[in-house]
Image 1: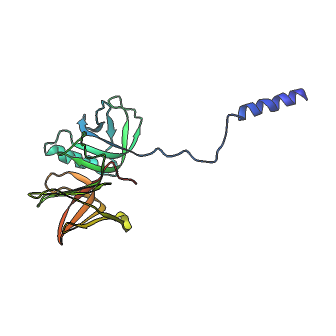
Image 2: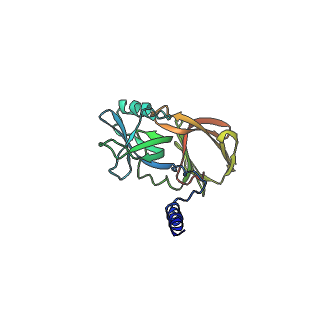
Image 3: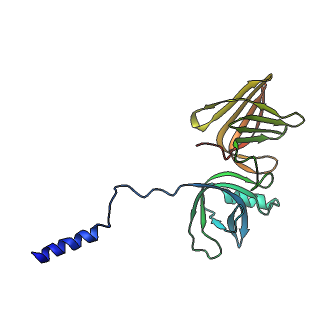
Length: 221
């Protein structure tokens, strides 16, 4: 009897550390990071802002960023600025600190503000277009409209979320009727060749202007 009790106690001790919660492992959350894209030894590398770490971006990612990066580099951009979302994973490559498995390309551009863009954190949406040049910065405080040859205009606005992820930001003040529409759709700037993850349409007093856009640091998903 004593032997049997000892055996049962040993089994209880072993299984005490094996607790089944009935829940699968939580998925690794996606991180949004800004940095530079570089090419080394035929591999595409992502280097986060103000860091020395480098992560390999595989050519088989579904975002198509490898093709876009090579296109920008062919046009003279040695280290395009990147704004990516994805997962950092360990890698077996001695020349890098791991892999960056991308799920979103917010931006990939050869010009403009980069790692130290002061407008990024307070901005909800940044939209712009060319011919004519225009830029709309949407923050939690208001909408800032900038046009070539015009004074900047700050306006209040209302937001409407529509099906398929479309967003409408509208304002009617100071004699101006402004509507900004953004749609989840890969968009290439016709002048710079930069890539953004939203297409944009600005309707200003009945005039329609098109461009690209991206969500800023203040965007609340």
